[in-house]
Length: 256
Image 1: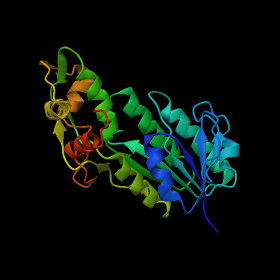
Image 2: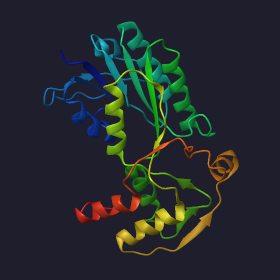
Image 3: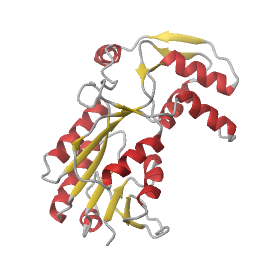
Image 4: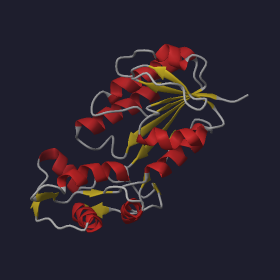
């Protein structure tokens, strides 16, 4: 009999890559907005942060993959999902988190650390995967800055952008296996500084922009200078580079 799985955030970037990889399971997707069922996937309306619809969503579910997140409230959402999973007797709760969650002094990272703590303390067997920023997110962030007349380039900012499809493949492997606690981080194949990322993006756009180097202030700046957002030596590294990501988009006529 196929395993019943609930994926929160299944309509997002990562979820769209993940769902086809779980095709052998009976899938439910939790969404804040009503959607028609799609290809045998049952869409359940609910809100993780408000705690709405979760008990119905997890009823009869063996595995929950919690992807839903946003600028605020990730710790609250994870706590609500974990509590509902515990009440329903869920056998495995898989959480996606971010590299440096316990080291970076920023609200987003602290919320992710709170989400990890919530699932660990829930009593539900868990697997936690921390990933670096997706190529798509880096493109949206740097891409918006690169359209300014004078482009600010953060000093000493380094990232390890990773392909969302590779993170989805790892999550599928974990969701279909036994609970493993926190597993090695998954990051991209290279560490890139902000100037490298910007230069390759401008080259892909075949344009030029004047730039100005700006310092990263305060505790966050000190943390980025120390590389606290970067993974350790035991991390797994993906294969698709930032340059390959940009080249593929250009080759398919997708806007960069």
